[in-house]
Length: 115
Image (cartoon, rainbow, N blue to C red; front, side, top):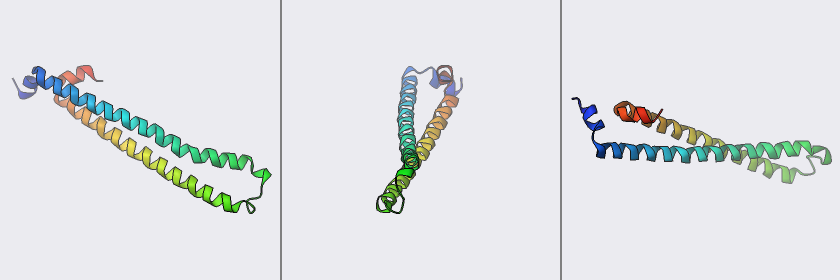
């Protein structure tokens, strides 16, 4: 019997592998929550700018420039931060998926459980 089949039949090793997969899936779930938060933060400035455009007939930009510039800076910073969160979460999710695929390739029992 080769080494892969020997480890597949060991209940202690199977429990460790299952625990490792559960940990990876929990981390993936956390990254998905970060992704959701990043998208919300990224979209918030778009909403603010859309509101300003919709109400622009009630003011002249020159008269409210002292309010407009800090608001645009804050919107820019929020968009950058949201983009950072989205990119970071996507990279982590990809890494977790790759790790799970490697574990599935090494342990045939996992291929039966996880699709």
